[in-house]
View 1 (cartoon, rainbow over the protein chains, first blue to last red):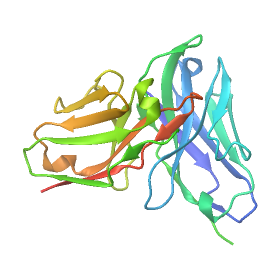
View 2 (cartoon, rainbow over the protein chains, first blue to last red):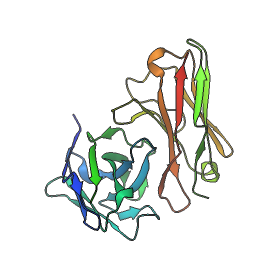
View 3 (cartoon, rainbow over the protein chains, first blue to last red):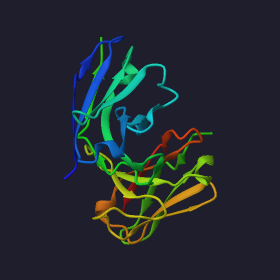
Length: 124
Length: 107
């Protein structure tokens, strides 16, 4: 059974770096796109970015200058780092499994498995 | 434009049919996925691609697309379908984008 478990600090001060890790229990870890999504309180979902073993990472244009998503195939983990956080970065952060890919061809089944979500609060 | 536009709120009488729509230029070229989210829970994939449902999703959830508009139709809405619904697709740069969400009320 596929499982995603999230870890990381939940309370940050402005200007600090948000760091979250998602541990994936999935035998096909290197065959999927792995994604971070966030949801500010009371609002909608925002795609942060994704990483795939065969193609590197892609990021939301609005966050691109501050975000890094990477993956460690030896430990089946992928991570999110968001630098210089502000109050506007307060949100529930989710990790999720994206599309299955073979080389540069991917299916269209998005986010069928999610982490439990982590509320990250930025406050001085 | 990379935006996806959804109506903020829609209501449906119990047992009736409701269509939730999502509009965006990129939908002419990319498939749409639909997610259901209930309070305090992670989103749940209910439809993707060319009207595909993950295992366990009832058949009353169907997806369709025409031009720049994608739709999720719930045929015979049940009380447990009351939730927020989000569409998701790709923009021309192959980056992900969500719609703003639609709050569905079942009367």
